[in-house]
Amino acid sequence: MILSYLGRVNIAVNLVKQQYPSSKLYEVDGLATKGATTDWKDVDSLKAVFTAGNNDTAIVKSTGWGEWGKVDYVHEPWLEDVVVPWPVDLELSDAVDLMRKAGYTLPFGAVTLRWPLYPGVKEPYYIFTLTNGTHVFVGCYDKSVSVHN
Image 1 (cartoon, rainbow, N blue to C red):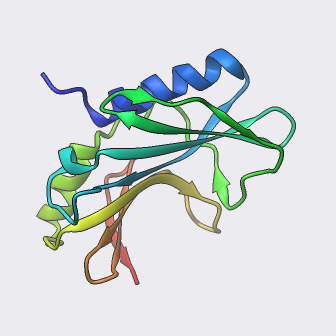
Image 2 (cartoon, rainbow, N blue to C red):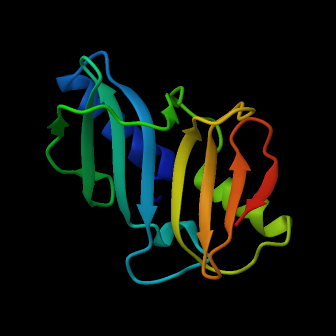
Image 3 (cartoon, one colour):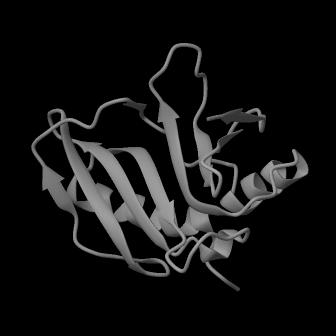
């Protein structure tokens, strides 16, 4: 059985928390390095960003499926995100299904899990970047699908 997206991110969360126990997840950027895709399993490169310490940032990048490199500590805050409460219940595979059922069938090259710091935004989203430049937002709580260009 293949390790799920959330399983992979959970490994990063635990890795960062070992070094920075008070850290909290801000976002996870995923890329399909072999090109745009319609399959969540092609999102093979991840970068997870955390708040750590006193307005500092911890960043860790995947080195393989479920494997992560060393944690980089940056003495600067990460802006424009709200902390994503971990764990998230919506799997990437389910977010892809919801997006497809809503009629957005173009391939995507990138997907970000984040809670944008913006008025009226009440939940974290999977944000897909489609090949035509459209950004499709899938809500992690209400499972709504919306589009922003």
